[in-house]
Length: 330
Figure 1 (cartoon, rainbow, N blue to C red):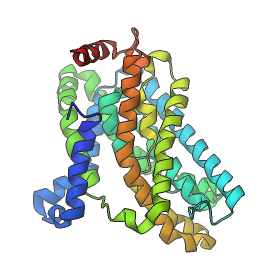
Figure 2 (cartoon, rainbow, N blue to C red):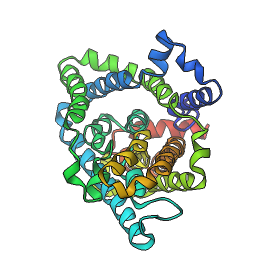
Figure 3 (cartoon, helix red, strand yellow):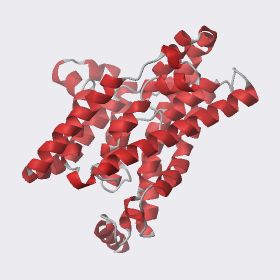
Figure 4 (cartoon, rainbow, N blue to C red):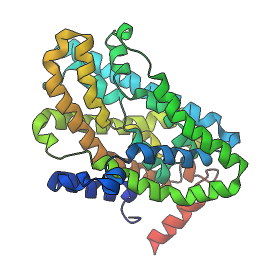
């Protein structure tokens, strides 16, 4: 896994998706198999957030908050701009059969599970801690806000609290007990591996056939935004904090497939688009799920090679970068 860029995420993801497509009943055996490999994502994420919270130094508490606000804000603004441009130029039917609200739903939303998985390889605890703010883009809230339907939506406050609590537990425990922090650091890759399997277990390649070319186009465009996010987010960060994690938000989460139904409920005129929109968002989530780790890894290698950001002499990953470059030179 260490030889493949993003291998800690890609390998278990591919295994799970192939099994889900060819042998879907495997994950429904029941008992420990279903609990761990299919239903285990929420539990694993909670555990992972405790692990990540334990590695946030109390002196750095401001940076996770800043990164989360920056990433969430940039994704929201770009998604709204794209949606409004498509609506203005193409009308309600959208571009290539992709309605304006679908563009907004896909771009403003991000795969939090994949993000924190990638942060274990390409970032540090401050990047993972940003998920407490980044998780705000889950669900239809931002899409409804962009469509002027704020009176029909409410901020999922308790969902945010549910993300913050495990991070806070790990943060307090890790700062009180250095041995707990060390144990969590060792456990992080193991948790990442099994959490990624449970993500892929809910993804079926047959979904791509339902949405066809439009869903693939949406997914490719969403993945391409990783390039934009990489450069913009790094412009907003101190030089020694710059890394490839900006690219890691160039994703569409599978839960975005639930947004069209919420939009149709809020605005009945949109209901005729919800069926296709659901398949398009689901397809985009699959496309970005596979492409984003490679894009993030490519930017990480670029920064390492040119000793930028975290790989610069003042960055925390400088020595790691030197060791990797030396290994590649052998």
